[in-house]
Image (cartoon, rainbow, N blue to C red; front, side, top):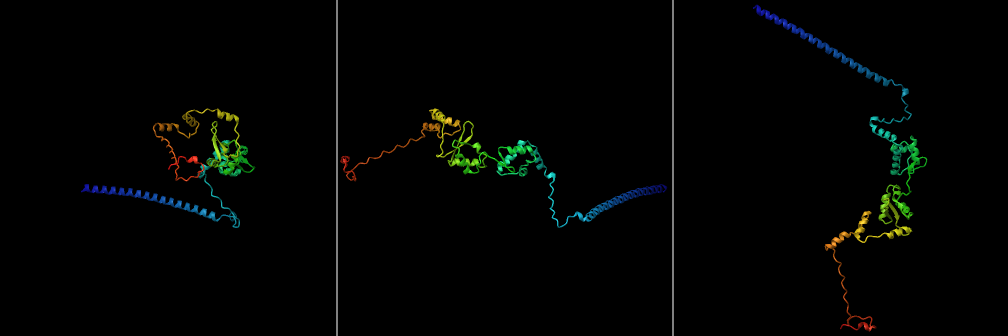
Amino acid sequence: MKAVEIDQGSCSSQSSESELVFGTQMGSLKESLNKFNRQQEKCQSTLKSIAGSKASYKTTTPASRVPPASTSVKSPLPAVKFSNDTERLQHINNVRKSPVGAQIKRVIDLLFESRQSFTAEQINEACYVDVRGNKAVFESLAKNPKVNYDGKRFSYKSKHNVRDQKELLRLIRTFAEGIAVADLKDAYPTVMEDLQVLKGERQIWLLSNFDSQEDIAYPNDPRVPIKVDDELKQLFRSIELPRDMLDIERDLQKNGMKPATNTAKRRVMAQNGNILNKPKQKKKKKTEISKRTKLTNAHLPELFRNLNG
């Protein structure tokens, strides 16, 4: 019995100790929770005070800073963020830092393609070349033979001032000895197409120069007198043509011309018997005169000696 009582006492002492530890832990947790709640309340009060100060600042703005309703105030343009326009700004910077020759080429290309007159400011907006801000560019552009500058505007200057097909044909007819196509290429944007149209209509001839491989435009007008040098005539007559057509066709092909005949093909076809002989012409039947023939030349009796009965 005494042993049992001792065990019961030890159990009761252990349970009291565990309750004490548990109570201590609960107290520390409650204290941490209370501390956290106090911090939250402090943060909320700080945010409310900041919001209240902003509202009071808006309401207390002096009336002098507000523009009067009668004055017209333009609404400010939306600001372009640098991050959204970086590529364009970098391109402008690269153009303006490029060599003077490269900037001149950009302007001439603009004038050639548009065929319009531009001020320095319009050129800057169109191709980002600052003509006014760069003295070297301005002077080179004003003196360029492909540019016409009237003191205010820049425009493209072609070698021959023609604007359409009629003026082009009129110009070519003034050059009886031919005009180089290279001198006409920059007259206006569709000049090459008009040259082909005039050639198709047989208004002009386009012949190649074997030395420079450039086309020459000649007028096809019988009224235009064409003078040929005696030296050229003698040179033409002194050229001896090959006796065989195969050699002639071969020489034409070497000079970039297409022969109108194909002698090799014709000879092969002749050997194979594929070329048909021309049909023989039928002999006309000799008409005989009989007594029933109506005679209109009775006064020539010798014509009618052999009359068939």
